[in-house]
Amino acid sequence: MPEFIYRASDRAGKIVDGSIEAGDESAVIAKLRGMGLIPIRIQPATAGNGLARSLNLKFSFAVPALIGRVSNRELLAFTQELATLVKASLPLDRSLSIVAEITDNEHLKAACQEILKDVRSGKSFSEALVQHPRIFNRLYVNMIKAGETGGVLDVVLDRLVDFLERSQELRNTIINALIYPLVLISVMGVVISIMLVFVIPRFVSIFEMMGQKVPLPTQILLAFSTMVKDYWWLMATVVVGCVYSFRTYTARESGRVAWDRTKLKIAGLRTLILKIEVARFSRTLGTLITSGVPILQALAIVKEIIGNTVIANSLAGIQRAVKEGKGISLPMRSVSMFPSLALHMIRVGEETGRLEEMLIKVAETYDKDVQHALKRFISFLEPALILVMSLLVGFIVLSIVWAIFSINDISF
Image (cartoon, rainbow, N blue to C red; front, side):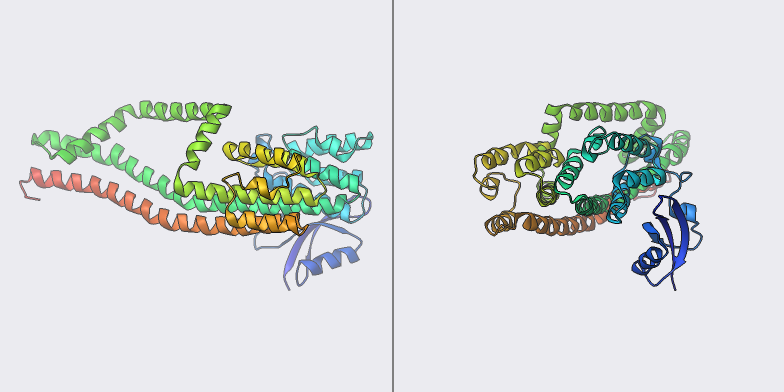
């Protein structure tokens, strides 16, 4: 029978860590509840994986904690744990106290403690959250506020967990798709740099001793090798300067808009960006409306969530039309980001009174499209990168061999 590692809380708020054998996670939950415990975190035990490592205790390495930031994964864990405790009918202040105790990220822990203090002083949960905008964005705060108003905080927390999980899955899909190409580019850069800095210079002295003219490709290669070896610091400075200038430029509103507009002009990239943003728009708006957030307020929040500023700015027309009572599906037709399938599904949802449900379905549809598009992109990019690396390395080897043959008066 498989073994599971768990972290749970008793009714007094005491944290309990341990392991238990059970058929699956549902059986673990049932056993823990039978023991009078509230399960917070459960995961399968793995060989060589101690409790501290499995539960990511404080001495585990976590970059976001070191740099004072809260990652999306940590925010998801916080929300999951809080939802579990609130659904177990624990008071909000006790739930926050437990979550603050088990949170690993010191920045998030401090925020939890401040939120707990505010809640105990009489503030609402949403009022306490709004004091920490770098951790909890407007979407998070407004959903919590809607849950408090409707008396369904546990339900809204579950929706937030689902929303954050879906968003994390989309983010992971994009990151995972880029890992292999980045590794391949890095290896290509290292191999070529080693050849230019260490291998090629050894042939320079040989060619100089022979005093014979080398072929043009070899001359170009030797000149480039000398430049890299003698002026690498200048090249590095130029690269760093360009990166800094680009980041400074895109940090400004005008620069960010110009860069986002440029990305939308690239055919293949435009399609991928639009699918990502349609999925993000639909899931965010659907989740907010389902949680009871008014549609105008929800649209304002969605505008902040959209990653591409050009697309985000185009949503202003939808807000105005909705304010004038024109509905949402009709003004969406004037925004070029929405494909016909998405528009049709949203119109049907609006006409049948199931807009929020249809928005979530649109998001799921385009999440799958993004995954397929990324797979196709990677299937094209991988052989293209291998071909480029082969051509570069082949040119270097051919230039050296050609020069050696010319020195020995062998026709090539």
